[in-house]
Image (cartoon, rainbow, N blue to C red):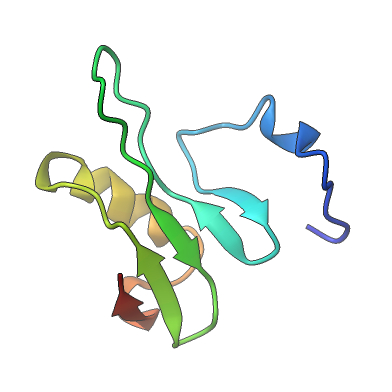
Length: 82
């Protein structure tokens, strides 16, 4: 993303089946869970081999979450999990 849209209009039609850049080098890798009051909001801060994963989600959603993370960085690049 060369110029960031601070109005976030680029998120209106975001393909949530893939990693979504919500700010420069900050990605939403969560899941939209149908009929579930608890949604899965996983965030990745991309920083090479020092990347940070925030709220990694739950076991039932983790396989897809990992696939989305690996669209951005290799999973081995995650140094910190918060």
